[in-house]
Length: 395
Image 1 (cartoon, rainbow, N blue to C red):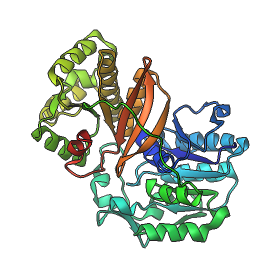
Image 2 (cartoon, helix red, strand yellow):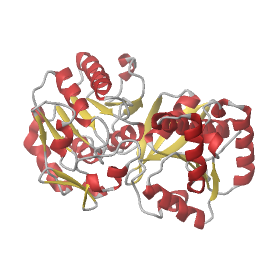
Image 3 (cartoon, one colour):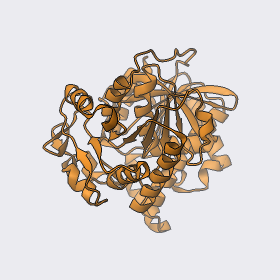
């Protein structure tokens, strides 16, 4: 059976929360991270999701990575392509949409950035997060990829001069269903949006089954957090108040690039496991109580903001690997695409299978490491209510 749909996402959590829109309806889906992925391995798959890891790249690099992969899959014979974008409009949206269009030889495409179920809507071309224009929301103050404009067309225009990208307003799921109906088969050949419109596309493409069953998930819940998003911080604070064990990486652990592969990392993991016992736990790479010390370390070592982001991600990924190597038996949770990718790099895993949504915006995924099957939940930093972690641990 020929591959039906290619999804291209710019980060790992985005790849998973979009892929699960299809796998939860019975589609056979896989998330991969290698641009050189062997397409012959898609035999038996309905949906291939490629994590391009281009959110933090320059615009030209992002265009080329998307163009090359979409062109290769087009030549392989895929019928539909969906360019997944961040629901907060971070990243190289315009250049990546242009890359997909050029790879398919198209002059136009539909872009539906809304996700009404998560209070992200587009009205008169302006994108809103819980009623606030996106540039004035938490995404406007993102420390790595701040969104500077709220008009979607203005964001696109800063990155590409393509004129054929049509931005659609949507404030309800019904709006998005209507848009898909108007586009028809040819109009759906290349579309873009976040997980919201992907869910509509999954139904339009005819998937109406059930996700595969999950067996033998451990009771203990361990979260690996590399996010600085205030929504996630609120969730962790609430979980700590409900009895979660909390461990924060110190300044050297999270910023010294040699720490993740060191014996000190392994010793830290042993100590954490003893501290956890049978309790749910959090490993956090962004202790707010050490902000001043962190800034001093960054200044003293001349670290760029990109080096800080990469070092923190690798530290939390190395911590997760060390915990698994020391015998951790738990359901894992990773918050933030950089964190998840760092963990997968640390354990040498480049393919994951999305299972289903545990809660809106929270995806259960499986992977194998060291001869053992692990289940890991993922979410973007800005998703979820304050009680989310406690609710997830209780499931």
